[in-house]
Image (cartoon, rainbow, N blue to C red; front, side, top):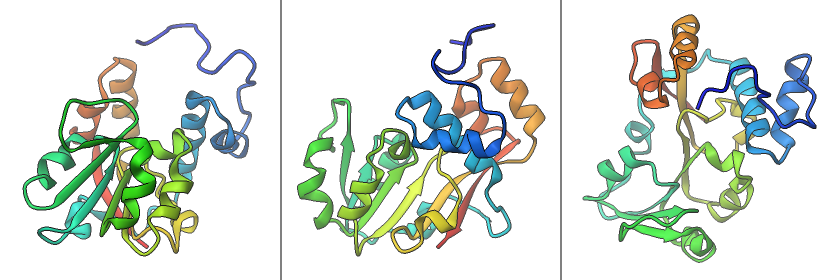
Length: 197
């Protein structure tokens, strides 16, 4: 819901004065504040080595391999479920026999060949442990919230896949109309991109 004239952050938070202050919000614990920090970092990320593509074009898991998907990322579930052993980990229960509760990640992620996680793991503060469990696996962070910052993930992630906005004015107009993220992702003003680490 779009709230006019209301605070966009919690009442105790002062609105950041510059990009450095805004990016520090990534260290906070309020999901809205973390998202602001993440968006700021992503807006400032180097975009010189982006490849227009979907992450699965690069991750390309082998038939029959074990793939962990952290977060129920519906397009990937559809693409992967028929040719890999797919394990989806979700914080909220979903009625799907592929979905496991988040707390079994400790046991199952080390047994995977590939781990695909969404940028939301930065917002809910689960990314560090997931990356520890994923050591030695092919790892990709995917989705529109993925920070395309190579330096932050070298040595623990193979691919970063997110969105590159090609017309920020048009996207701002779409957001101000309250259009859902899927409309923005599939609009001509945004393209899926990958960074190889």
